[in-house]
Length: 638
Image (cartoon, rainbow, N blue to C red):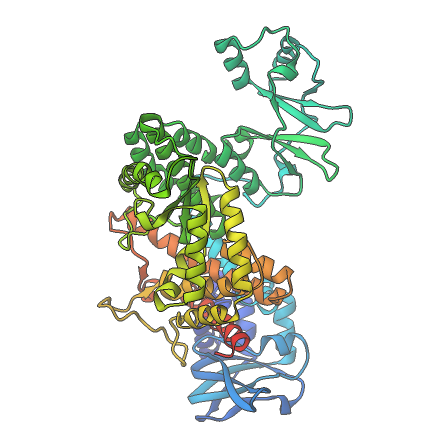
């Protein structure tokens, strides 16, 4: 009641300004007293079309502006050709000039009105007061879109957290999870005494260490059950004979997500935590990571990986979408979630292959390849198949004879994967296609032609085949193949430029006036978050990565490596990573809502269905894609 009474006592124009601000971030998350301070110290300024609002000639910036009506265009001189370039356009609710005001310097950009424009402005003293007193405002001024992205992630997580609750997230370092003073023994200790030590301490594992406390093995209750059931050794035997050697270890500073991925990928239940000298400092278990959060990624991966029938795999696919909701609730960002989905997809693919080999082994050594978004470890719940086979030709057989054995096998696998939710590829980019079931030498020849020919079709294929990964079978042949591909692309500037030109056609869905550009395929007011939102990042980053010898396929990992190599400015790389992740997060959230409403999965959204914060962030994310493409344009003179 006191707050309501206080609001009624404020002048009407102050209340009107506050009401306007409350519809736009960061003001929508600020305290009412801070909004009132802004409103009471603000002035409404009018600018006619094409009028300069702010420029370097004005000296050190002394005002902070918020667009109330109309638009503001940013202009800079291109030193290469002395041409004036538009660097941005901002509209209703947007703020300027943050960097110059915080840095207490002149702006480097000419800010010009587009049409009749009104701006609210406050003087430097009022700005400093807000900056000092409001954490939300200060965070926005210092971090811009990054702080807004945090707000989006917090809101996404808070909805899912309402019924779960957790004090840890998957970003937490392992030292927060790891059991301190883990139970250890020497390699010579009899199994019986090791098990007694486990029982006395109520733990499910014991780590075998050497004299320097380096972990050399691990023994778990599961190993004990196997030992007894299969009578592998007497309980008097030294534990070194029955332990799992070379246990998986991670540094204490690494996060819980890294441990979760290893557990899911390899079906481990325990991981050793070590210091920089590889000395054991703790053990983290599957239960440590997920019991408190009631999210059991490792158990789901293990259940998929040990399924005995195809129908079991089909039924388990529904659990993956439920897991995505839970992971969002426990702090996993979009980059983590797509890797989780990809990991579970990998486990499913391997199990389908294993079940078919058990039924009808073709008798040929092969590696199952995956391409495109699966190759980049960026799959969401909406996925199709992009796969192939790399085989080793046995002595005495021709490559065509090998294909006669492998192609029927691959067709069954492709069909069964379709039953599991991986839809058949409309372009027939599948292992059952004879053109994609090749020996190592044939794949090498295929890529030689692919790179040297540079046809329009090959440029389309580049978005698929240049993001490749081994899912099943030996990985070394694939690694050797791709290293050769990287070398050829690095030495072929023409192919690089054609790749860059093709990537440049993937325009973000923004008009020159920063309004959304909708798809033109019959969808009303729809944005395609995959083709229009993510693809400009994926395609552009791929060009820079391949040209600079980056072997990673994942887009975020490519950006990190390009920043380490100095190809990307570190601040630019972080901005692009955040923008890419935000689009991916909105896409995944839309997929979950479609599943809940029993609607078919698509990549289309109507931005009018989003709240103002999400629309603001989405628009800014698309603008970051434009900045990345500008770097591509400059690098390859497009």
